[in-house]
Amino acid sequence: MFEPPNALYRRPRLLNPLHALGVFKAHSQTNAMELEYLARYAKGHRIALEIGSYMGVSARVIAKELAPGGKLYCVDPWEIHHGRENPCWTICKRELRRNALLDRVEFLHGFSYEMENAMPAGCDFIFVDGDHTYEGLERDWTIVMRRLSPGGILCLHDTTVPEAEPYRQFGTVRFFDEVVRHHPELEWLECCYSMNVLRRKIVTDA
Ligand SMILES: C[S@@+](CC[C@H](N)C(=O)[O-])C[C@H]1O[C@@H](n2cnc3c(N)ncnc32)[C@H](O)[C@@H]1O
Image 1 (cartoon, helix red, strand yellow):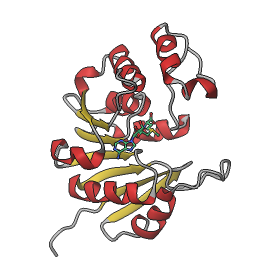
Image 2 (image 1 turned 90 degrees about the vertical axis):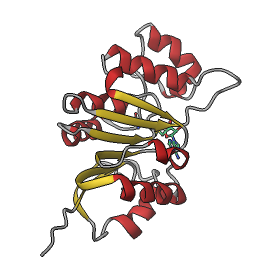
Image 3 (image 1 turned 60 degrees about the horizontal axis):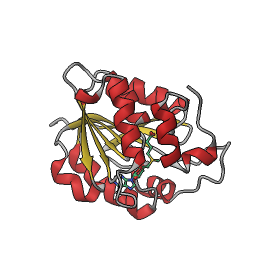
Image 4 (image 1 turned 180 degrees about the vertical axis):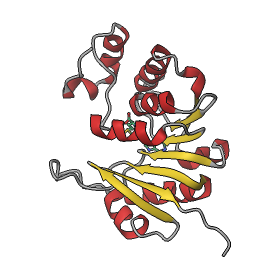
């Protein structure tokens, strides 16, 4: 399978049949190096949450690495387009089915701020890649801080501007620098390209 050309991933309705035929891969803005980090940090976890699943590429990588019996909760609105199923959602389901991962995934169809009650408590791995505005990450941050377990891993996409792509100036970068980077409840682990990785500190009684 080949990477879809830029023009095609902006037209998911055209990409969908080509993905079904096995001609083009599902598209993701998360690059190969970031996907490798996601796989490494998701490994062996049991309750994972992804905000922003799109065509299911990062979901496939995360779900594959979970412990036996582990579950990944994928949150995305996959809004109906002109009365028809969103083609990104069709591709996402196919991507996971082809990799025999459907039974490890629970789909939460809606915006993160609408779906919080359906999300599990005590997540040990969270990947946030949904709304890239300052306010969007601020909203998701509130959810993350209510759902992430002590010792749990948090990966935040597009929270550092990569040197190679200086135009990727999202509100998420400013929110990360202002609020997340030095948050007392989190330990910053590393940054891979645009994605920062943190761990929630385990607080013990002195
Ligand atoms: C950059 S794509 C995600 C890519 C995916 N994580 C991957 O690497 O394969 C962003 C997705 O977030 C979704 N999205 C935007 N705002 C959201 C929100 N508030 N809650 C959940 N999903 C959201 C969009 O519909 C879109 O599918």
